[in-house]
Image (cartoon, rainbow, N blue to C red; front, side, top):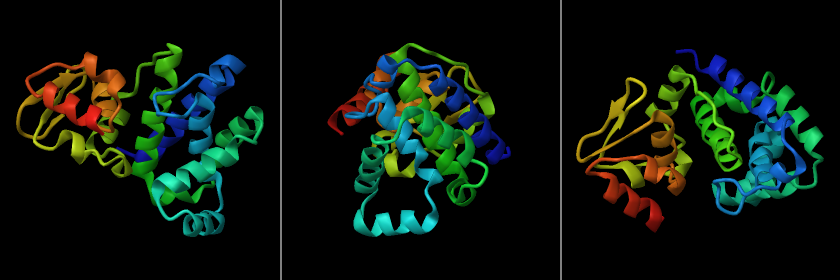
Length: 203
């Protein structure tokens, strides 16, 4: 499966979504703790930052969490129209998706759901795109701390992984649970759910 075409499609869906939002929706809390919808969009604009500036910012903010906070806070001063225009145009020339395509796709897919779910705007996610993210979730979210020793089984697409007590649910819910989103836990089932829930809630 060609990852880049999925990144471009995911970004296009995100841009269309953001262009449709009202000011109240932009201010809505997302599934990312402490981040509004606007903050999530600001985080995703990182791949439009030139590499040398990103590298220097990384030296000043030497952890993924600090670097993310730096760019989210910087994006709060950017008008939303300019933020969305940047997201619409940066994907073709950005170094980040070229160097880290699977990370980019996972980050975009999960964060788009972080925006859509609180706003009550569902979508049907392309099955191939979803499998790519399920196979390789965002490593910075440390998914192994949630899913080690569990067998995950999607109920709406052909996908499963792992050994141990089973957790079943839609591919979307599993993708979000793998990176610690408690909002989807009630959508899952199986003998491994209590363990997964305790790990997510403890984190």
